[in-house]
Length: 423
Image 1 (spheres, rainbow, N blue to C red):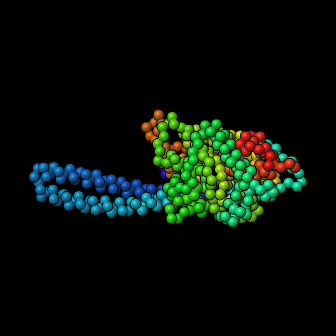
Image 2 (image 1 turned 180 degrees about the horizontal axis):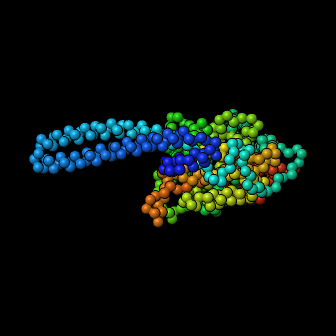
Image 3 (image 1 turned 90 degrees about the vertical axis):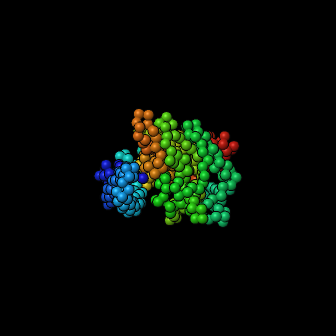
């Protein structure tokens, strides 16, 4: 959530920058400023009435002490009238405050100045490429056919047990999945991240604090009886570890990592682009989360991008790094870099990671602040996160890119984790 002070003090800048996300905030911001002024005026009136009541209370005390009982009774009547008027104004204050909060959560995060203008993924900028596309035989297979041929993943069995988008991993397919999880976690720990195993369900406050609510409720699985949401990513519980926390400056940066299954409804997803592992409802992912001081967040973003790049390099996958345009960014992000790997069996690029800086957008909802050594006032932290990495499309690319006449070759870095070199 954008800080109210920033909106009021930088009204036109906020409007202009949100236009990069193709969001016209003019009307909402005008309402926010108007409501805030009404709220301030009301609060001032309430404060004045309370001050007057306190003054009268002192007068009554003096009158009673001096034995002026009749005068005290008359003044008490005025105090009662002031209390009634205060209650009346306070009853108006609550709905105004609620309406103001309701408008603030409708505003997406402001994109950073580096974000290119654009409406769709076609307008994203490729900022770097690496690796070489493999040369495969003419009879190359897509990963869903490879999975069936070697009995690695059973999509039909998952459909039987649960429904479409819930695959079952078998034998070496399961071991490959587990190997990737361990590899990604080990690499994150080497990079200074602390590992957590968080809950897979979160409450409404947690989902709200990181921006999933009210923006993405249609994409999350909801357990109505308990009012819990299945997590769409480990970002949600990991970041909320620091909800309502005031950090000391020397505690930062905070670096967390965690492996979790992730659950996404992916409402409206269909067609060839969602076949196999390309888009599923339950998948495994290792997440990295950072909390920094504002002036250090973009340096941290670069470090996180470099970390994810090292992972795809070690897996020997051809990749490219894409800077998202305003129209393709998430509601909460200020700047996002996507990683795509080339999947040779499908002859297409697959997104495997998003690394984002949210600046103070999440921390404002989280009430996550830090205490600077040089300043008495507490400041909002900056939060960042990234997939490091998501398993399904990595598995798809590994299976498709490493096809040989003998089978599927395992990248050298994974062999100590899988215990085998070939499927």
